Image (cartoon, rainbow, N blue to C red; front, side, top):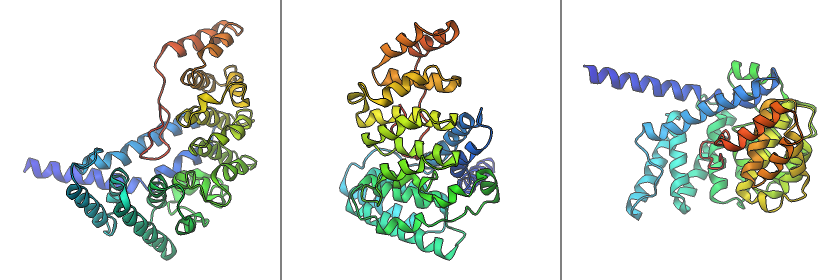
Length: 341
């Protein structure tokens, strides 16, 4: 009896996770519309918890990240994922998509594209099974497998569509996020990597940095760091000087994230480098600390030491301690993100 009760409790918790997924990925960028003093940091933590739960579905279902030992096992994995994606248990969708991402190959790609079409159809029907973050995750996995693919099957996700949750709509507090659906977390997961978009990702999100809405500019700065395109450093250099601390904070994290695309090789004398140095004296502590961590990971600790030698004692102590300590991981952009360190 105890074992059955535990199983029912676990199933209830998993069901709760599935229901909560529809709101939380939408909260993070929307939260930036609130108190600009503290909410972005809190919202990043909330986003991190949400993403950990989303990825945790894989482990709750007994899944692993490793590749299959044989073609037969991999085929079985693809078949199992396909079965999950044609079912009506939405909590199984993220785990199935992440399995397909790990498996790769034409069979996995075909299953993902069928799911993208299914989500597009459900959205048109306003079906309760539709969730933007499932649609967005499918687009991201497809883009990861082939960033140069035809974008036509994904364009329906760019159509403005308010979230179904009243709480999400309230937190967003700005319909600008709906008007620019490609910039909003969840929907933007895949569009940052689809190179054949018109306009392409970097020009697309650079234009968003000109919006009046601080929410959109913050989300755009975040998205630019996820493009894996060093051309994003130029607009991010401007975002580092944005009047909104939320935008500056996301710009610092994005320049750091681009080290995975080779940013350290091209930063010498770049405006983004000088922007990070300027951020070391930002009035917001979280921005100063994040800039120091970014410069450390980008092999520019000497610039932090130089700044520490010319600033006040309190800031100098913080900068030096930041260099001595482990670097905080970045929030995950999407559930399969491997650019957090």
